[in-house]
Length: 196
Image 1 (cartoon, rainbow, N blue to C red):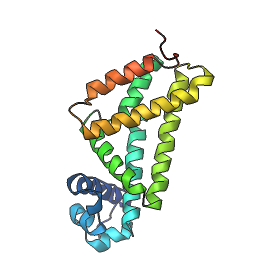
Image 2 (image 1 turned 135 degrees about the vertical axis):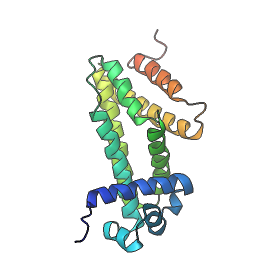
Image 3 (image 1 turned 120 degrees about the vertical axis):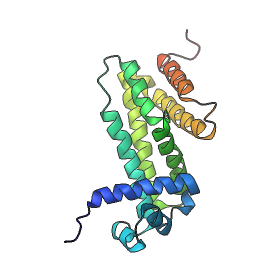
C-alpha cells in the first residue's frame, strides 16, 4: 500500500529546508535542486509542490509571515496597552534564535524582491501588514488622531531599523537593547519633540 503524504506538511518541511539553505549558503543558492537535496527529496518530488524557484521562495516567505501572525495571536491578554505593544513588537524583532532566523531570511528575501515580481508583491504585502500593525498599536496608545500617521511612520521605521541593526550588528543591537529602545519610544509616543 502506498504511503500517504501530507502535502501541507511536506510543503512546510520544504520551507524549513529553504530557510536552512538560505542561512547556510545564501538566497542565490536556494535553487530547486539544492532545496530538494536539503529536504531529502528528488527534484521531481519537489517540483510536484513548487514548479519554480520563485514559487518556492514565495511560499517560504508566506510561511514566515504566517508563523509571526500565529505567535502574535497566541500572546496572552494584556490590559496595559503599552505593555501589550511591547509584547507584539517583540514578536516582530529578532529576540531569540527563531526570530533571528526569520529576520535574516526576511532581509535576504527583501533584497531579492527588488528583482522578482512575485516576491515583490508578497514583500509589499508583508510591508503593509507591518505598517497596519504599527498603526493599530499607535491608536491603541491613545495618540491624538492628527499625530497617528506620523507616529505610525516613526514606529514602522524604528522596527525596520532595529531588525536591520540586529541582523548586521547583533552584539550591539541585543534583545535587551531593542526592548529598552522600544519601551522608550512607546513611552514618548504622541509627545511633541522636546516635551518632557
